[in-house]
Image 1 (cartoon, rainbow, N blue to C red):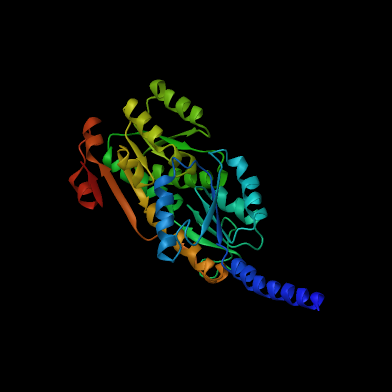
Image 2 (cartoon, rainbow, N blue to C red; image 1 turned 90 degrees about the vertical axis):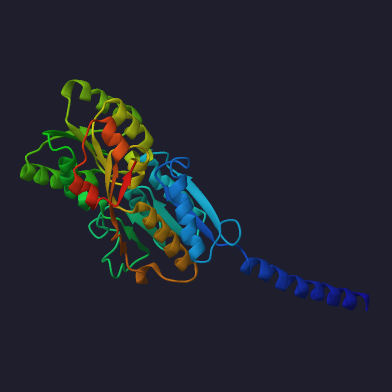
Length: 329
């Protein structure tokens, strides 16, 4: 009798415990893996917008979703191992941010885990998706087109600094594909408007400093900073150097102009980060990456820092002021 009672008690306890265990398993927070090429302090503003996109999709970090961050700290060679680490942790979705190389590393590591990327050039050409409308695999994301806008940005720089003849172009050789496309487009545009291009390469902060030091002797009339994750993460440093060497410079995103840069022209990257958050949330809710078309940023912004122009002794043409989406005084 005692044995039977003990068995019933044990069975009853197990039956009671089973729903609790099942509920705990069902209620476990989904986990997002964020793979970023830069550092957290530099990327804080954009990550905040990413979280806003997540919130719009119904997810709040720490409340109903957890986020595992992996930062390459601009050591782009670390991205593959960081991506593999996120895959080992079995995150529900990976947001690949900061660089085209983040997206490529995530694609290589995650064969089944969904990946939402943000890239500056055609993701089909990069091999990330089979088409924009139907990505077809486990990747989708945002293309903010800045690599394709290089020629137009050079034309705007020439309009702002019409006396310029020699333009230094700062590129990152680590991102070879993007650099090749940018230089090809710039060389063609430069020929059509009579500019001479001087290519300067930098892959670290030290090399950025060395590049600017050459301007003392080579004295280019203006500077074109290529769109690149490294340069975006060093935007304060780049703007400071451009001010120190008194060289008019054009950049690919508005946060450079907001930091004191002379001019920026490109897609609204902040909006792109928000959209990555929205897509990440939709995938957590059950959407398939293969069914979510790649979003191409359609909002292009020309931002001119009038205060910096005055410091450089430049008169901004009224026609350019009229076309600017924002003039920072």
